[in-house]
Image (cartoon, rainbow, N blue to C red; front, side):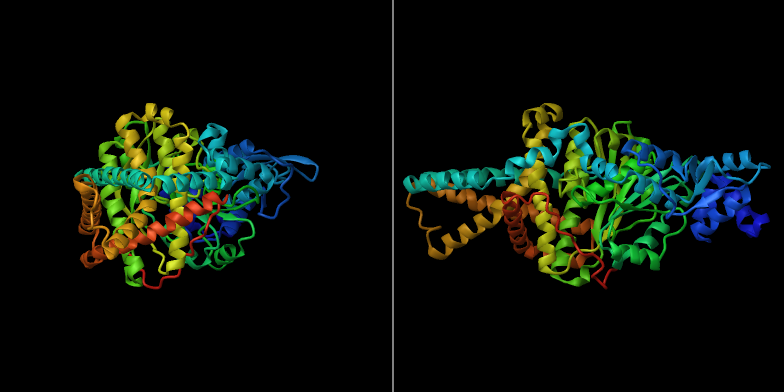
Length: 600
């Protein structure tokens, strides 16, 4: 390459670094970020006498999803163009070195072999796979366990209005003839549910986290290829920050397989990437249309193409701690092979954006600094967060990836991993996120989350006996509380609060006329609600104590109001399910905050 006018010093530096990393020299040269990908590939092509193809090259005959996956993982693809059969080789990995050695001294005809940069190779492969790739990405776990997908299990809700109307009519008739009995039955069910959730939260609050990992600085040559998937949908505002975060990860760039997953027609994100190009070697997969246009569908496409033995998922606005990949890798190395997933902690860094953002911060602190690490300590199933999940790629493929029809694909995947015999744990490393700052965007986002929890509960609950037998009693109860219990208490909470307020304002709450039994019943419910507040506040207090800042402690006292808003989102989610919108994805807009303060 130096003989072709390419500067010599970057080649020398890349060769030295490649020796240290035990990586391909050309990968190191690309990852250094000093030159655009097309310049490097063009210089390589000239040096070894081959043609370099760009993203706009003729794609050739269509391929299926398996051929697409094989091509992306091996970096070699057979294609027919201009009436001749050729091999297209991605300019990465040891194959390039072998190809250069083979080509040395041979005629520069390049009739049988051509090369392409990683991004151009991926573009050509995606175009060739087309609808086959879209169909496979939409199928996800339906290929191995269709009964565990929302696409199969949720049609029970496609036309539910008649069933819902009949159920409501039955309750109404029963209430008309026996109001007290119906009321007390519903109240008893709600009371038992709140009691169970209070006990569950108390147990989690009393369980210490055990996910601290000492980080030995080992030999970088022993680090495996690590795939990073980022789904982007109209995220032009956060592209520069995202690329800064990805390009400063404390992991050898030559051993990172970073794929940005974008839907066809997303000119906002593609335009932002044109203005702020990623470094050479980072692939941008523009996905073909088809199936539900959801984040899990995009992730499934990325999983097909993933080259790493480990894989992680980040969101567009994420700012992970730079050493997170190394810390997750250390957790995998210290555990048994049945560990499939390591969940990092999530935290909010735009707390100055108002009350909603601060409540979001308290909620995340309680969840990811208290509850989730406690579940890991107890060995219970963990409903995953939507980002910073680190997977053993082989395990993720064995369970089919993500359910493209589930709008809370992370919680579903966490439960499915446990159901199929895999373990999940946590790592003490943080990814900083941006909380929504306005009520309507927050309500839409929370509606999607609650809807996904409800759908996940239905999907796995349809074969509840099998789930219980696979998980065992304790893990089954824990999974039920963490998924179905969260959704049900969110639905019940505003109803109970409104009922108590009406009873208190009208005086009927204190005018007990049914004797000691009725008085005890009312007292138990009031006590249950007080204990519920106490356990919720305790988890929030512990989360704020562990995460900070201390000023969030004042916001603990307004958490009950925040829970009412969660209840509104839960009822909105139930309404969408009833009216056949269980797969509707309400997109959260990122990049709206100018007050992010990510700790260094």
